[in-house]
Length: 97
Image (tube, rainbow, N blue to C red; front, side, top):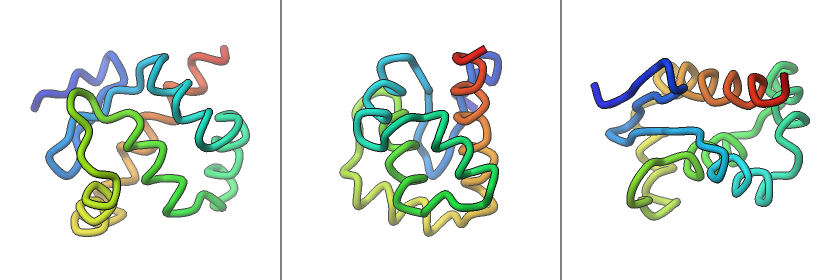
């Protein structure tokens, strides 16, 4: 595995997800306040589009086309995506602490 869990990294659908500060700032620019996103996730109201956008912004290295990334996430399924999403959301919360 390429992912370093201590840095909040995870792998999904063949991509390394690294929630760096700049990646989270870009995601916030696209999705609105990340703390509100975390709250929606906690309430089970996070949309698939929001999930894809957040994770796509956090892909390390060369980004795939967003539509191809979305298809890859659907292919691996929500069971594989959920722990990665959780890892990114934990990094968001740690940044707020």
